[in-house]
Length: 437
Image 1: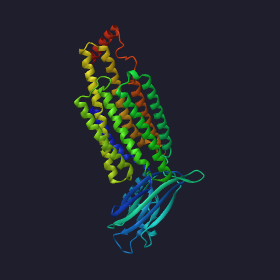
Image 2: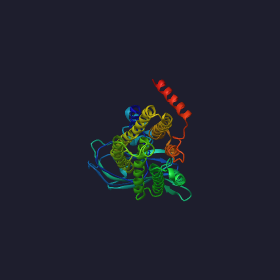
Image 3: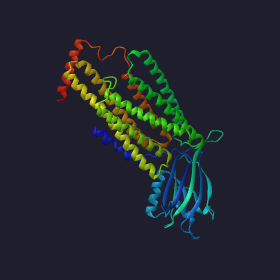
Image 4: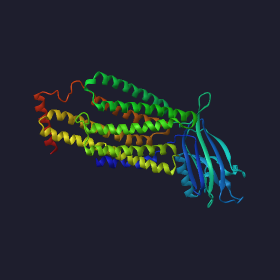
């Protein structure tokens, strides 16, 4: 358990390396800022990329008309190019990032010409992932301005705007197809519950609710991304997405806790310590949902985003560790019961099932929290959707496994055991204990 928690702490470092912009049209207020470099947003351009930049309410703290305004402005840069620019500045080859031939100069403040605003439409013909950056190479000069940035790619014969990054433009279709799969699973599960209605427990209806919420969460996420793709904003659909994302998260973690405690399968009640786990997990999911909203709605380089991303990861680590404890408690109780109640085979089969579930939960958590982040780190921006798909397929596999292993049965396999199997299972349990010793 401690190893799992320590492993998840690696996410704090990994997450700070991964920053793929959602490419919404953004409005940023800069007030009396003396920072030499201010990153704004990231975007994966194709060969038909465009940057629309509208800068208004420009005000410099130094009103000297002889200021070299060519040393203040905006540029686009890839991560590799920026590393070389830093080296150029360190070596004295250039004194300002705007002077480097490795960046794409969008506009400097000479374009202002005494005005308080300027507008630029900048074409990007070299496909790559670029960061929009503001540079102020004038010492002791504070800048105030309002910046509207919109980055998009032109697609098709009609040159329609696609505000999703090159690696994300396929995501609406991916989410929509996955939602259809979950709706199909919900239909299959309803059929199973009807056919096995005499052996259905309350947990089975809870499992149905989780699948339905996941399906709605995906379809609203598909529409959210589709709306951003067309308009550059997500107003309206993002609210529904956040609501169902919250409900899905709470229900999924609650389901894992309930199954891990054996609720409905082994006992119709929860012990005090198991109730405390739920009382910890559910409020933490509220915090995680708030953090996710802030992360999605702020710039990739905003200070609030970094802070809330750390909060989100910390909460996620605690939740993932917390839901494993009830499964461990159930395994321990089943091992003790197998030695004392004379039904070794029955408890051994239950023990085997919970061991399998424990391993699968760990694999699911590791894959979706660690492996997926690693994929985002090493995968090219053009294939960002593959890491999203990998995480969703892992989630789908987890849902299918849970439904298959804990489906209602007309003849409970735990009790369909004869005396010979009972004795064999008892011997197997004894051998396992001796092996562990």
